[in-house]
Length: 256
Image (tube, rainbow, N blue to C red):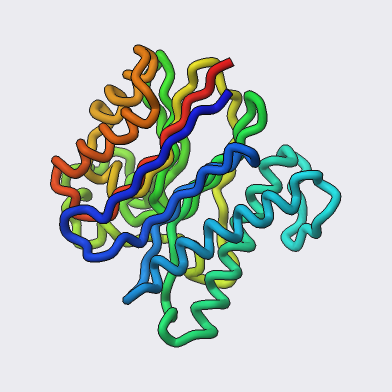
């Protein structure tokens, strides 16, 4: 059984909230999108992303009642292929909408999503929103950031992370939904253990909280803390640390 709860907040600095989240227990689909763009364009991009992903996942549920415009990876499960195609369709839709209307020019969105069936999860990431998993062994970041900082650390693992964290280019993304007509989608698959805790979040959360804080609150679910309570605790902690960006938390727990 899956238990899920999501919360989102504008933060203390931004005037609008361009994040969106999606929880669909029937489809087993969970998503966080962090929109970017002037005026309301970021909000539009995030909602287009969520709506398109959900639409294709629902349409492809039976596996034989849809087209696969981006092909199928034979080494991946049906769920992983469904999710990858859904994200690529979302990218195409956001890109084309940004070209069609001047007020949406340059809009885009980061995104993480999980598609869960029984004890198997396919997950996807574009941009710097993240998926985390927590078990008794500790906290693991499942997705890789599409960011300048992540690129620099990949090239030089010995680079000073503290100096990169204050670099003027630290917020630059190397990939986002809608940034170009075709996009690369990071896809992973994982078996979920009983008691597995998952976190999908925008950078407003992980940018304000260290791994120790994330692990401490996620780990409290093993002591009987409710998912909704823990999600609110994560949000409150990020707000207490400054809340300079929109903050979105989507917390899940799987039990047999």
